[in-house]
Image (tube, rainbow, N blue to C red; front, side, top):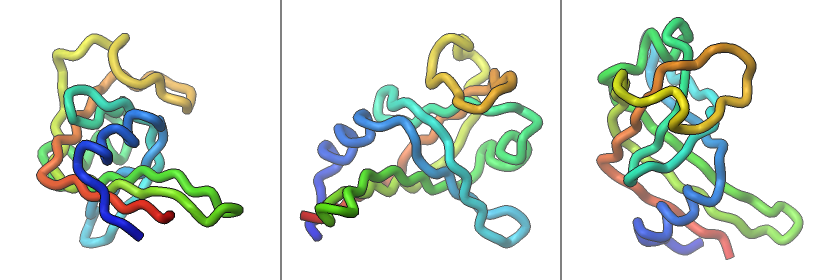
Length: 122
């Protein structure tokens, strides 16, 4: 395992489109898969305002992880972002990732990092 620089972490995050969003709800951890896009060193996701995320993550501390693993070669990388979630009501609905699940997801969430760390398995 080798630690990666923050620049390498952001470059790798730009190469994938699915990660996991984590937060604490009623004293318990919650982790959900989300598709995302990197914009200006922030993670942008789109959600329904009536979803669990829509009800709980605004103005709260979050963690976000994305990775890529090759189990046959036993190589891969993982990036962990810790920070803050904020809703962006100004963003056009055409900007940001296209959500994979069906349904209307007009609310853009910006995940702003306070730390970005990553490891690569060689």
